[in-house]
Length: 150
Image 1 (tube, rainbow, N blue to C red):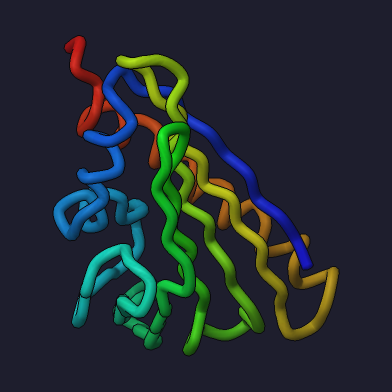
Image 2: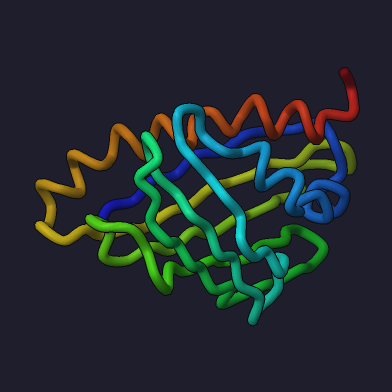
């Protein structure tokens, strides 16, 4: 199992940020050079599902994630999506989307990802740079969507 952990600070209230995790944001987070078609987006609560066609150069694969957990309190909000049907070579996928209160007007968004691949650690290590690149591009999108001081 390999881990990927990235965080981005934004200037807005954590409840407002968490409420902004919707289809519009999801589409804006699409990595460059990747084809992405959203065929179902229920939301970010336990029991919801997200169905995608993802790929490169027109070669699409299905990706279905189930939202398996969702929590909100006075310090943070999060939801967890777990891969139910995921593209090869991925074997398992869990993505914790965490929105933490730093102050009344500042929030930390965390992408905490665990994944494994068919082929074991070698394939997981080879996948890491591609996944890292795809998630690094999220920071400016998060800031564009959520920074209240522009």
